[in-house]
Length: 235
Image (cartoon, rainbow, N blue to C red; front, top):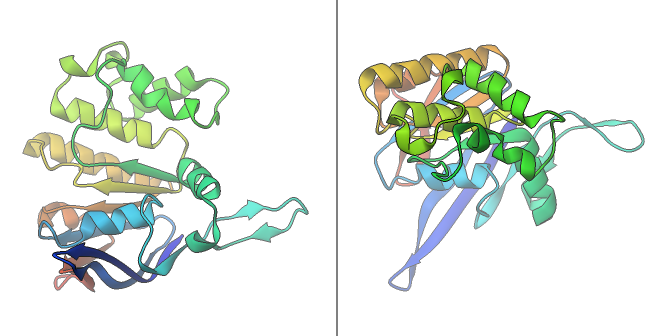
C-alpha cells in the first residue's frame, strides 16, 4: 500500500545538519497493523509526517500503491510523492490517508458532529455528510454525543471523535501518532480494540506508541532509534 524508499530528513542545529530520519525503508501492506516504538526525539513523528505527505524528505521517496482508473480506463498503481504536485498530494492525502495527530486535535467551537464531518468541506465525498458522521459515531461508540461540544467530553471521548473524523473519507491507510498517550488504561484498551476492528474491515494502520504492550497488537513492530528504523527485537 505505502512504501518508504531510503527516506532521510535533515535539520540544521548550530549550523550543522543532523538526520531526524536516516535512511528508512519499509512498507505497509493492505490490512496490516504496523506499530513503531521509540524514545521521544527518535524521529517517529517526522517519519509519519513524511508518509502523510505533510513534510518533504531531504532525500528518498514514498510510493503509494493504490488502485485507480485513468481516463482511458487502464488501472494504474504506484504514485511517487516526488512526482506529484502539492495539489495532487493533498488530494491523495484527503482521499486515501486518515491522520490522528498527537494531543486533543478537535475544534472546541464545533459540535462533535461538526468535527467529524469537517473533511466533507474540503473534499465533498459524501452526499449525506451528517449521515456519514452519525454512522462513524456509532462505530466508535459515542452516537449520543453528536450535539455535544468538546469541552464537555472526556479525553477518551475526544480521541474517539478524532478517530471518527480520520475515517470520514474511508481512507485506505490510517496513521495514528501516540493515540493513547494521555488516556487511562481502560480507555486506551478500548481504542486499541477499535483499531483492531478497523483493520478487520480492511483499513491498514500505522501507529506510533511508547507503550510496548499496545504495540503488541500490531502484525509487525519496529523500533526507531536516532532516526533509524529496525525490526523490534521481540517481533
